[in-house]
Length: 301
Length: 225
Ligand SMILES: Nc1ncnc2c1ncn2[C@@H]1O[C@H](COP(=O)(O)OP(=O)(O)OP(=O)(O)O)[C@@H](O)[C@H]1O
Ligand SMILES: [Mg+2]
Image (cartoon, rainbow over the protein chains, first blue to last red):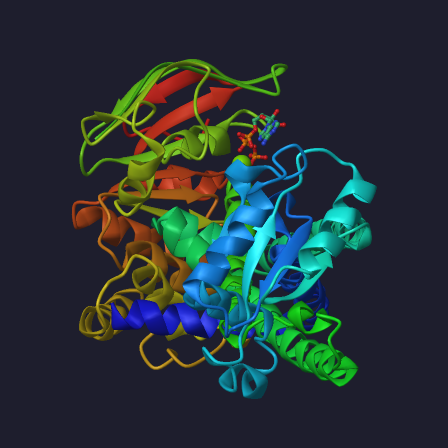
């Protein structure tokens, strides 16, 4: 067992060194492609965050002052329900303090200091309103009317801002997904070529191994390990890129400040860590599988 | 030990390298395969460890039909069959010791077995003291001895030798032949393809003669021609 391990690592190391140019090319391509894969997830998450308070067709949010009593909240609800031709009452949703706080936590991932200041005395609760028909002017009128209801802090309309953002998101998604798929294919082809070259360089050894009765797995594993290491190094580099660009992005967005809500474009650290972990696992798996398939393909010589 | 039944081998659906070959090799026997170039000697040897599969007929080794064996069992079949070639097929970046140890390493033999078996087999082939040399520091005859040591270190039941003296001068070739004879006397079955008339006539072993893929003669204690 020990001698097998030693054998495997020795061969893998030697082979990586021998093919240094191809190895570097394969590693760099995997790094960039995995960075794009991870970046796609982060960007989508940012957009989803930004749009999340409008999810489910919500077009109007009525913010209720934190000082409102339960009776006053009930009044606002009755007022909203009094126009069933415009408002879809079955989808009318009230976020109480706990739910509003949860939403704020998601939106303020990049701004924990602000989030910590929130409490029952200063965080408004909200009604999410789904309109029945797309009569924008009616909705605008309605919103103006609701602003007058006691304890309503403000009324915000999605208008066409949401649609613009959604379009932008879909565009960005198409580009990043397309690019990352192309680059992933490039990375896999390079890993495949590296393995083929490595096997060609060692064809005499492989021939002898087969003749003396080494199993195909035994022959294949150093090559799979080689692919796995290439994938791993590429993935580690891509994680570095992801950390760096996420920091850049976060700083940029936080500087925008103000009440524009763009702060929600920032993703939480736990999501970033999750994406990096996935990228690492995916990089290693893809590298090992690609080289394993390549090795099997070239083993019947 | 080895049995071929009506074996026909056709390469690329056009070259018939073997036609209806049938014979038996008993355990411990020594067989010469002779015949002109291209008559199918190497093909016949490659049939015996499933480097090639026949289009028709069956090959039996140690009581098993090796063509019906699943691919996963082939490595275990080959651990019982040693191979020797005209060009030695040594690994040039490994020493004598490493070349021989390699054959045990890659089938997962433990270190202590390797430490004990490799010097023993190097002693058997007469290479004691040269274990740290690289192939380019050895004569052709010595290189062939390394390759025999590698083929024999796992004590296989069968040795397949494809023109093992083809690159050697007569005296050196004779030394290799004597070594193979000695290994044969330990009970190992040996099948050897050769063009070496002198050696075949000197040994007077069983001779199977091929011509264009057909066995034209199978003679006990035979001569080259
Ligand atoms: N891999 C292959 N693909 C196609 N044809 C082959 C292959 N190997 C051998 N042949 C053909 O099969 C026939 C027998 O070849 P083989 O190598 O078995 O002859 P041989 O008796 O060993 O010859 P030599 O004495 O020159 O080594 C030849 O016509 C050869 O061209
Ligand atoms: Mg031949």
